[in-house]
Length: 116
Image 1: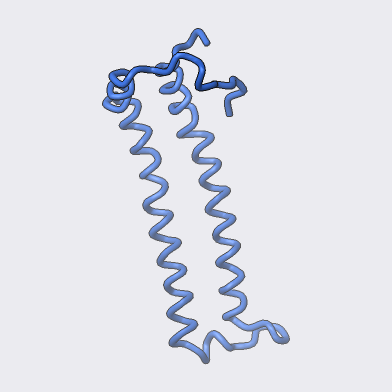
Image 2: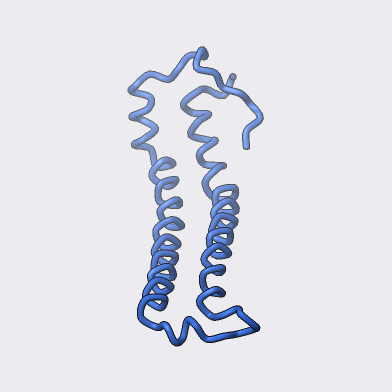
C-alpha cells in the first residue's frame, strides 16, 4: 500500500495517456493476473454454494444428520460458507499484495509521473 497521498488538485493525466496505459503490456498483464485468480475462485465458490443449496433442498436426511449433540451436517455446511468467504478474502489479499499491487503501482507511477 502506498504511503504517498494523491490529490485531485495535482495535474491529472490527459486522456491519451490513459489510453496508452490501457493498451500497454503491463495493463494487459495486470488484467490477466486478476482474472486468473477471480474467475476460478468465483466459479469454485458458486459451485460450493450451489451444492449447499441443493443439499439443503433435496437431501434433508443427509443435512439433518446429527454430528455432535444438536449440531447437524446442514449447520456445519452453513458455517463453512462463512469460513470459505474469509479464506477467499485472505487468499485474494495475498494474491493482490504479491501479484497485482506492484504492477498497479508501476502503472500509476507512469500515469502520474515519478517525480511526485
